[in-house]
Image (cartoon, rainbow over all chains, first blue to last red; front, side, top):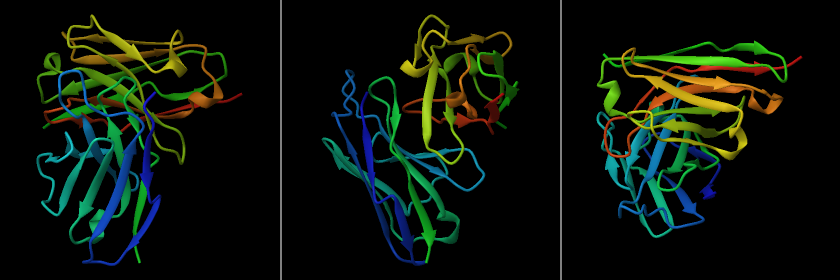
Length: 112
Length: 117
């Protein structure tokens, strides 16, 4: 199985400041169709997961533009340009190119 | 409004069986692969099984192969997860998802399965 590793696992941030989460895949997450199905999810406390970013850098509908994704090869990054209180939760990187699709361990974002 | 409503969770003894259901509405159900994911208490997320639009293709994570079976009924806009030979490590919140790599994706609120004697 493809192992997805995130860092850091805990990220205390100050409101209004930027935040960045790294994700590394044990194999290239390039699908046989040529697409890179590397995604980012947010899970707020007590809620279901919600996808924020798909195919490395595409924001899902309704996702604020302070969230951005980037990366290539096996290294990817989720950035929040200015953290807001509603951004508290756990963020997961996920590869959807090779079954079983796999998530990273999660990064807990909290306000300092 | 899109809705995915899971049901069927509960407490079951080790070795027992349970059938989860997920009723979908508000989107074209038959155009989506449907999947089940789970989250053990205080743990991360894990995809469990996925089924193609017409039900002809099914994939499972190794941990549940031979014990779980995913199915769907496009006429009823529903997807199911038949779970048997349940183990303590299957204890989790099970989420139904209409997951698409390049389109909007939808998740249910989850149903808790507890395997314990």
